[in-house]
Image 1 (cartoon, rainbow, N blue to C red):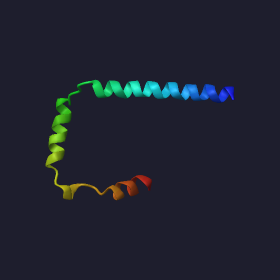
Image 2 (spheres, rainbow, N blue to C red):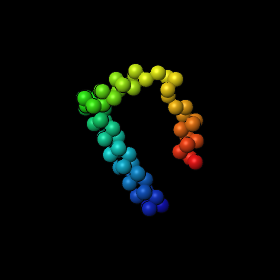
Image 3 (cartoon, helix red, strand yellow):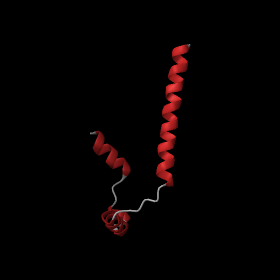
Image 4 (cartoon, rainbow, N blue to C red):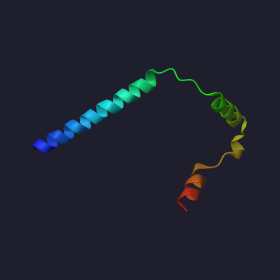
Length: 63
């Protein structure tokens, strides 16, 4: 019983740390780098017909 409580306490503490980390990410005012903006602009110009189907990507990765 005592070890179960210790394990639960450890899990709860880890969840709290993860939540603090997520909160910090959400609070920050991040900006995209110039390189990322350039890549995003290029990606937006790519026609949908040139996209690779998700099913095909999964198939290729799992082969």
